[in-house]
Image 1 (cartoon, rainbow, N blue to C red):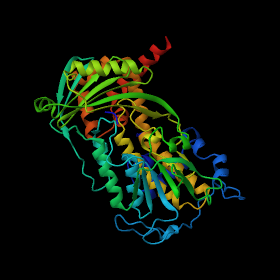
Image 2 (tube, helix red, strand yellow):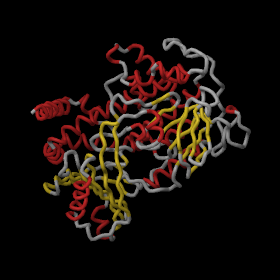
Image 3 (cartoon, rainbow, N blue to C red):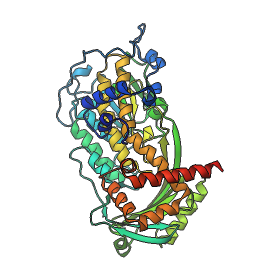
Length: 495
């Protein structure tokens, strides 16, 4: 399936996608009311004196962190027709590109397109940059769970290749059992088609899309930056683009992730093949996926049907690529698919952020893979990309409006706190699940195939009615079971 809920109710709503005005107030109240040991981990990294010196106007002292932001803000750019470029508020000429964009988004995947939609939907001038021409292939299982569906920008219809209502679970190819649901569990898409539709939605909202563009570096101070309210984005061809706020959605190995200083604590290797199959084989898989708990710690494999093609892949911790490759080969052969020639074979690394890793630097925020946001156990990333992208776009508008470094940092901190109070809590539970799964995969297999409540929880998560974090927080049996596995894992690790 490659590619929150205990902390702060008000900010949790922000993570669920509330408007930045309401979410901003909730986040600020939560920060002010929190006890010292409850302050968000991002605060030291997001709001340091060094940042204030970097972002303050030349020759001026930064405002005191406790002082309120100035009431005066620039007037909002009025909404524009889809495809048009608003320029009046940023010094450009009508009909042309603005001299300084309100928001610049780097990367047109689900996170970047979602951010561009959110910012452009507020009438801001938004430039969306993408290195490749669209549509383009992305290594990804393409599973769309309920949370992803709910986070889609308005008007986006999923290009579903199949709807899944059955899951076959195996453990190293054995002990197979198929569980079925009366309702659709999740949908399957090709990422190339999904990303193209999301980019189109961003353009309909008013964003300008440029493809075939590579970012060389991002600067927030120095001779190339006209003032401290501006970020300079340098392209590989020598062009410089200016913006009041930048959203980085260019992947975990992108320029913005490095610029912000995102720290990673989990890196996994995923290998995948797109295998065209004859109609009789495709019919056997229609509406059903397979999940195999693999031979390597924390590993699993999958088969996702997409019409006349099966997406077959495996994932495990980075470090033994040869063993991961053997797992894929054995998995494919065991399924009787080794005789079909893949139309595409690819590999990629998935990266999870450390829980206290920064999500912004000055007027630059990161989301999706660039922020290391994905579910640590299943490595599901599309829902994290869509949700964090929308938040990033909303808060980037506030950052663009900020008149000084202190206010810009405050808005960036609010974004970080909203992400942590929502997606961060989900990731914390996912880390616990992965740790327990690495040591006790047979327990997980037995629960999902033989314990009806565990299967019902699985269906609720895939359908989007709850999350792993919510289940562990509110369901006594799940809470006790995971706590018991935590203790067993701790005892095993201490020996």
